[in-house]
Amino acid sequence: KGVRLLLVALAVWKLVNTKPPKAVKSKTPAPPARGRSKGGNEAKAPVTLAEKCGFPSRAEAEAALLAVKAGKDRLASAVAMLERVDVLHRFISPTFPVLLRADALWAAAEPRQARYLSAKPLSEEERALGEDGPRQLLRRLGKMLQDLDERGRLAPEPKPRAEALLSGAAATAPASVYASATSETRNRGVPREMARQALDDHDFDVDAAKRWLCGVGTVLARKEHFGVDSTEEVEAVFEKTGKDAAAVVSHFETVAEVMDEVGSRLPAVGRSDVVLLMGLDGEGCSSAGLVARVCACLRGLSRIFIDEGTLLSICRAAAPTEDDRRYICECLHRCALSEAGQPVSPEPSELSEDPAEANAERVMAAALAYMRKVSEVQVYLTTFPELDQPSTRAAAAALDTADFDSKAAGRLLRDELRKKRQEAMREAYKRKLEEYKNGTLSVSRVSHDTLPGVPKQAPA
Image (cartoon, rainbow, N blue to C red; front, top):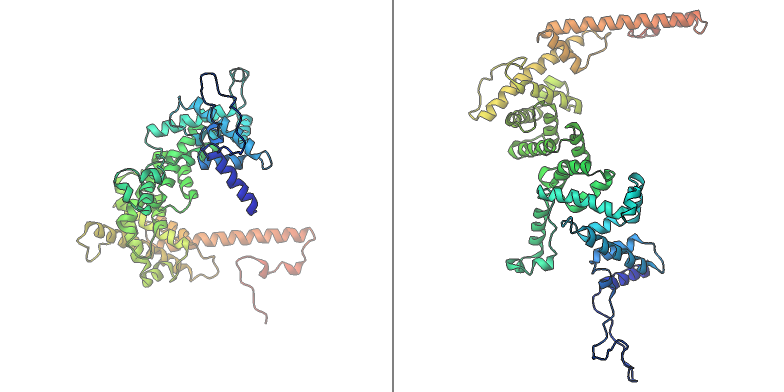
């Protein structure tokens, strides 16, 4: 393995070395150079591999060597590929100046050519004009990069550190300062590598790749600022908004704004709660009321979760589940939507002087009053052990139907559960009776204990 790496490194050096080979000194006088003319002109110096390939960078030389098959002719194959890349770049770059040699190297990869031509085969007219897969691929990429660059969505290529240190005050800047400046520059838009990968992933569809880059790509390029944990989260929002790039960016900007305002300072809540509350809202992500609404809900959620007694009164458990957490968020959000939408609106005895805090206190008081009524409905139904106990959301739906009267909601839900139990018992009896008539069930098995909803009798 070490020998192979050494051979690859030697091949890379041969491809990027710009110095011509030194002449070998000999004891015998050298014959006259064949290239010398009568006028006394000297013979031309031998052409180096770097000049032959268009002076590739080290990254280009490494990529070319990795793209060709290993063997004795690996260096010659890499030279041929880099020559094609140089010709391709010189041919297309006048039309799209934003293109780099690295883009031409991407388009010249043989597996990518084969996949492109299988999806979009060339016509006879295009073949007659000398068109091929790499040229069309590079034109598609150039068109997309040119549009992104004109709209300010393409991150500028960072200068090499050696070049940056030669300019002005940067000559005395440490490497860490240069790295942070480079990161800030690239975060202004999507990196070129991401643009190439997007075109690859979207089957070379320029419009689809551009929509993805303007939405998902812009967020991922600034994921440290937005606090994004995974690509799947961004793509889920992208699909939910109908692949609207502006809506995706606005959504994550709002999440970051809420986290900067209150989310990072409140205990027991986090970014996942902000995302959940944002998903419950039906308004546009850029509305000013959305931020205030989510902040009020977040303050109320934090106060509820740090108070164990409050949790016991609404969830009947000191350690609520994820479903309980979502239920509390839904109740807070419902009470924060509007004054008219609040099921109950008790006035707290003392409100904070801060308007944002006072709004959060009103929202939390209304939500707690509603959730305690839901809990009263559930407690009432525990007095009927023969019935299936309802879920929290079923109890909340009954409370809404009964106009927020917990006693009426309990009776309504009790009657519904009794009807369901009686229907289940009748269906089970019919099924067992049919099995008995078919001879698949004995009389002794059709008993009181086989019916659903009836507890089994203990043996005497």
